[in-house]
Length: 362
Image 1 (tube, rainbow, N blue to C red):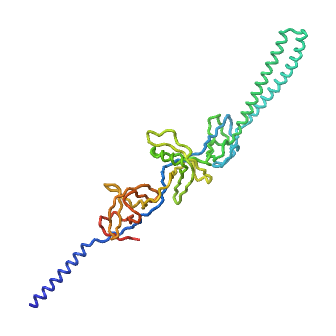
Image 2 (spheres, rainbow, N blue to C red):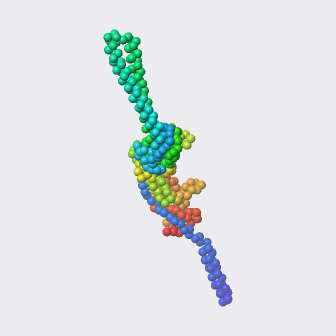
Image 3 (cartoon, rainbow, N blue to C red):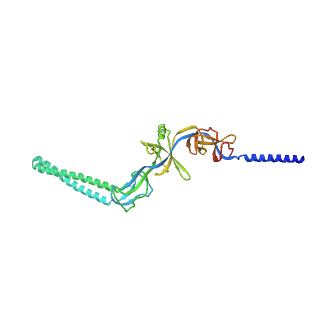
């Protein structure tokens, strides 16, 4: 009898131990996650686009006369001012042409003075009937011919002086000059050889395109004085933001791309924007007040659309469908599905299932 009691006690203990062990084996471990709180913020309503920086003005320097380049009066990459001497073409042939034109003018002026005096004398003689009308007309015609010759000489001299002035090439704008494309000593042709390019970068333009659907909102914000325009340059270790304004909207939509071209002007006094550079253009149209905001990385995409994992008060996970709105920086607004204060998972979502217990990591 005692042996039977002992056996029953041992058997019951064994069953209790087995059930306890089985229960422990069935418990699922908590999933470690990182969370964030849904908050309320005033969010900027923005449109972003990729833009290309363009010089405010760009001038290709060429020579108007043919000759030998004898001087380049700048260093590559210099800041140049309007009216600054840049190049000199050998002026000697043109100086000779000026001297020749001056000599011809002096000769013909002397002949004109003589013809004028002769005509004045014949004016008196014709009145007294001492010369024939034919003789008088010959003298008058000679005077008129020499007068026309002097005018032609003056035009030739002015042109020679103009050609001489073209030997000295000045900057037509303020700007930054690029590479020297022809070195001194080379022969250049008129209006053919490019000598250098000057880009005006203060101020500067950024050209970009936006979807045609956004055009109404942009024009409305402009008319209300609400439009804020920024160009963002992202570097390896830092970024730079410039403030500007939209100055041009194209007069037609590109039917091939469904976009419209815009151009913004930036003061660029610090010269951080550079022609040919790509930048991110951010147009701020206004502010959305009291928006529910969460980190964008909390949003997942499934077969039914976008959703987030919400941590409930009992530390279990709930999959909740959401409707997202504006994305700005690393955050996004939630139009439907969350309320302020909800706890959403931003890291560790892949291991979650509905009802799973979570362990919040700090």
